[in-house]
Length: 196
Image (tube, rainbow, N blue to C red; front, side):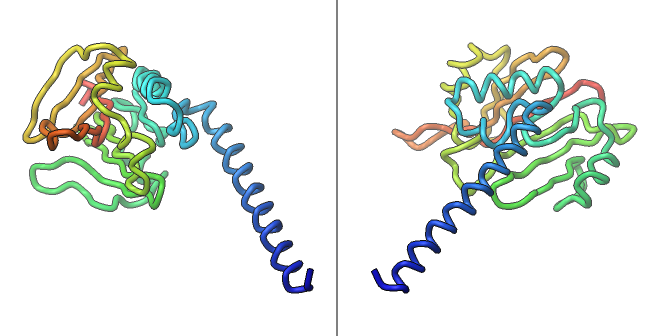
């Protein structure tokens, strides 16, 4: 083996080791967060049933994956202190603030009610790889994990499955119609509190 080939081989090994160490740090960090938030980036890649049940467990606490905020309790000022200014603020007739946290992390929206209380938390998942996380879920997978919804609603072009999660509503939102032969995937989830 020449010195150049040996160096390239060691460079690849070193790079692989660094990636592994970085991945272990991420897993450890996610695991530590997971104790507070049972649905994290690593669990988003699990089988749909356990992922959906994890979302439901969080919903019973008024939470969604990826945030520490609680529907009906958290003030929007707390969101601002934690995440900074929203990517897109409320507009006429729309009381939602939107955050696009970054590649691979996902997008979120917060419905703000009276007293600046966040009453609706939305998680849109991430678009980097639609085969993982919220965007990978289908309505049939939701029914398989949680049974039939308490209510099925329609709004514009959306179909909404509503589940009671303690004092909160958990909503799975996706397209009402899909191209024949294709599966309708969930676009986003909401955890809604009637405390506005």
